[in-house]
Length: 327
Image: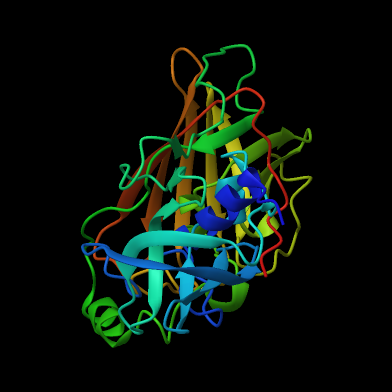
């Protein structure tokens, strides 16, 4: 059967960010792979699982040993112009990447060599070939001051701080947390506030008059920000995303969120209580190309002082919020 190059590229790209086991669905590869080392394996692809939050394929080496090879999400690969037709079962490839920490036969892929000599790069340097594949096909960042806030924004930076003023209760809880047993997004469990604002995929602000909808690609979540007391529920319930009330301060959208029912502050085991309060500020850069974000997290049982974090999104014309459909 003739190899479909684009199918192969996408297939190969899949193993980059997933965990080696289909039992785990998470976004951080650090607990499962040693990214400081590189190993190589050559063999035949025997199975492909094309899905969010990560793509997983199986490879049988020349000793008939089966390997679990992981990569980033369908959402990321889509923006590289790759789909499930990139590769087919039966294709022979050479792969390189970080070895598994919990299994001798697992890998986080950084490079894949195809039968025709072309090499797929996953944010890595060429290893075997001068002919490479691995281009970000998204449009360039563009400025526009007329569109305002209401458009699709692409994540451009991280959210988290390096250190936090933790209470003794929070330190004890974090020390008892296990990155595998207590993985907050295992089995496609969605993130809550303010954790979800770290999401690496596009999001869109939609003006609904007395409400603003924030459509987030990751987990297909939608935040509702009530802009008037008339539109807000009189007796709001608790939820993963909480109850958000917004107002404008000049051109800055300020949002206060309470009634958050989510047990984690972040992905390192810092807990969160029901009394947590988030105050967010969204503002545009002078040329309209960047969305600046800050969130102040107030949770006295967890932090001895308010925690302030920030990140940015950028505007790429033509970007869309696509179905995530986590499996």
